[in-house]
Image (cartoon, rainbow, N blue to C red):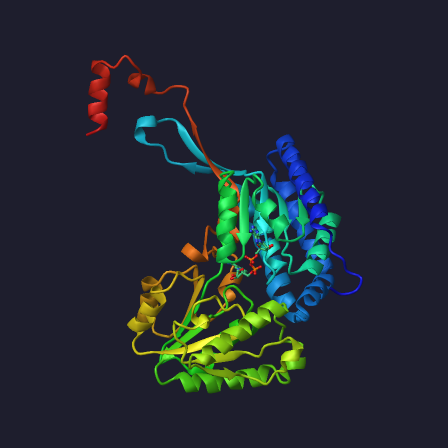
Amino acid sequence: MQPGFEPNSNVAELEHLKRAYATQRDAYNAAPFAGEALRRERLEKLRTLLLTHTDEIATAISADFGHRSPHETRSLEVFPSLAGISHALSHLKRWMRVRRRGVSIWFWPASNHVIPQPLGVVGIIVPWNYPLFLAVGPLTVALAAGNRAVIKISEFTPRFGETFRQLVAKYFSEDEVTVVNGGVEVAQVFASQPWDHLLFTGSTSVGKHVMRAAADNLTPVTLELGGKSPTIVHGDYPIDTAAQRILFGKCLNAGQTCVAPDYVLVQEGKEEAFVAAAKAVVARWYPNMASNPDYSRVVNGRHLERLQGYLRDAESKGARVVPLADCDPASGKLAPTLVLGATNEMTVMQDEIFGPVMPVLGYKTLDDAIKLVNDRPRPLALYYFDNDNTRIRKMVSSTISGGVGINETVVHVGQDDLPFGGVGPSGMGHYHGHEGFETFSKMKPVFAQSRLNGLWLMHPPYGKRFERLIKFMMR
Ligand code: NAD
């Protein structure tokens, strides 16, 4: 801990959680439907908070990481958060519109509508890697949908958690939005509250605990989880461009990104060309890696040790470990490092890496590469580098993943008009943009009977009239 910073005790955070839940529930019961003007006002407050306090937020996150590039906090957390708010503001009217739906001829002249309705009080659980964006992204769509929200920040980012708690309290009343900090004990109690919806971002293993806790209340969940995102480079694609774009996605936040490329498949014989291209990119981007402010630290000693363990394990089982730069381990940074000759027996090919380590494997045919991907759990992202549209279509339709990037990595997450979410072990449900609005709304179907209608013809007693009619209807 840095001097002068003492997080609140779990007891204090648990009290805050219970009070916040009760306050928001009462406020919701008193005013269950937030109109468009109120939703806009809340989104505008969130925007002002971000624009006014960017530096404080970046400083707090950097303190939690030991060092996190403030440029990356702006480009990967503050900017996409603001873009999401602007997108919600410009589409809010349309999203909130009551949708007219068709009526079967047998029920004419009744009418059908779908009315988006706020769910109520929602919970948002946030991981440490992008603590701002992964709190504000879900919050934006939750507020756009007219909800109240309680947010739980990770115990690994306590300084950000405290800064964000204070900022949210400055702009929002506790019955609108509030932030809870504290350890895993608090997170467990948080997941067991009877939220109207719970959005969890974090690891697949903790996601299972969250879903179990939510099941006791039948709380619907959106689970934004992790996994090993494969990256496939076709032999015809320029290897230098591929290396640059893959390294971009891998080096951001020192690889601590849920959609970072996890392992790379290149056509057999291209491995060394990829290594050379990757080395050149890193030398250009990060001279003096250890002291370079553009390259972030691994969040803590435990995660650094975990990543170094993957490298030791791979080396001891015969892989070649290639650091792409010199970096003094005392700096708390780990240089981007490739692993050649990795096999399924190595932990680096079993666990989600979540750091700047990247196995590079050779494949013979594209079908072999597709099979390798499909033999593994469904990933959060898949990246494919190729300029041939037929092969691109084949790759997209033969594999299943949370999302796909063609000839680029990571930035699909920042497309506000695309839904974001995993599939199977990488998650369930979607948010961002319109899909996020629907996730946090009850899309309520309403059937309205007409004053004059023929349904009385179907009423009992069931005699000849009923028989003739049902026969006609069932033709
Ligand atoms: P984590 O699963 O360890 O923790 C996430 C959050 O869950 C934290 O706030 C933590 O306090 C809380 N938590 C811990 N135990 C809990 C429990 N038993 N019940 C309820 N909550 C609990 O994940 P992490 O280490 O913070 O983040 C890294 C993981 O998150 C990686 O797997 C990464 O891929 C994933 N991730 C996914 C996305 C996405 O959008 N899909 C984004 C970022 C990170």
